[in-house]
Image (tube, rainbow, N blue to C red; front, side, top):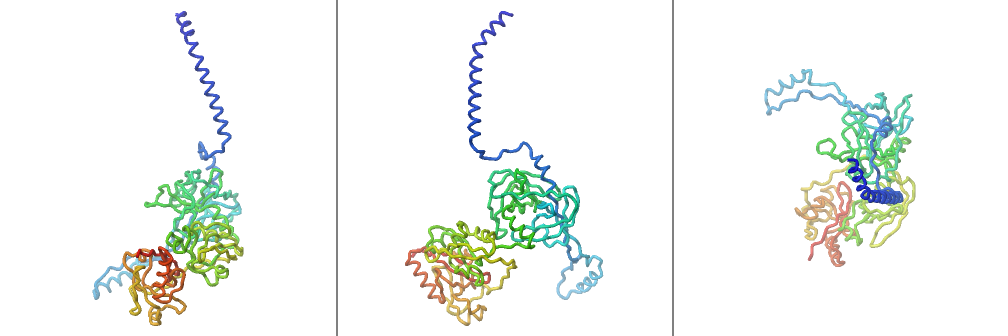
Length: 502
């Protein structure tokens, strides 16, 4: 057996040599690959083996927010419905008036949310909707300490609120990071108080940036798939460096629970507002004094623009900075303070973030050419919007009416009788829309009877003949659409309508 073993070993030796050579070559290739990778910057974040150490560090800076609001007493027992003249009605009214459940004492409604400490002096950030209308606000620290909180300031448009607590305890603040450095796919951590379960940590990635969810004029949300539920509102969204890059604000969910689509206010957008809330108790935003709308392909064609871009000025506040600088309705703002306006919704954020009193260059498109204007920004006054009632859609003037087939509507001159009947001020000029064809493009774009058309292709119109004449000029110029300036109780806006082929 020994000889067979020796022979087997001897026979095995020639086969071992190639394996050693292959191993050496593999090691060499691996070393070269590692050197090559080291020379190239990392293209993506590495997933940590665990978030435990980061969570331990961040949890003390996150708080639960409890707010209570008094609700007036209500009728506990409803009045049954009786036919007119029923003898039972008087009997039940007397019975319910004496019923102890008829009137209920004022009650308190409690809502729960999240927040985070932004300053060791006791300043806490949360969402405005978490504390809106609250009579009492409390902050519950990570160690279950309950502290009364004072509302320092609120910003409903960005849905932010700044609170202040007074305590001798050592508070751990969370730093605000640079949300602009976030990339789609980066890891993020959400900590909050979902369904009253304080100190809940969830992880995910940045799903998208600059989301507009139609919640306000400054929408620029970070979208994440980190689990966010009711009660997470106002809580922080952290990056892997332990910096707050967003304030969790909203979720998209048909059921009310997380489906992996959550939204956070970017930290960079919140920084200036939070500083204003701390110093002034309210946000201080730049003001241009214009009402704008998007530029679509039809509007771009009617104005002679090569492509749909910028923000179309629908109305100008006569007392605003834009009016002083010479900006007019019908101008298309192409750039603001050296930054291109690729989409209309970018302009309100850019104006709001610009310091009050700063003079900026505004490039507009007017009469087929670019024009640069200097505008000194004012301060936006945060006032509730009020809307007046306009003429009823089914009311129509009975004189001067004429069908405009090219536009799919009928208009009438603003005679003194029409002005008096529909309470139209003397300073409003144009023609009134009295009928809109069902299913027409004018109807699809929201034009209604009672609207007043003041301009066609940026030329004032005072009569129906003026409207027809401007349509003819557009056809002669080879344009496929016309631009209407439409005014109603809600304000002015531009509407582009395609011209049918002759």
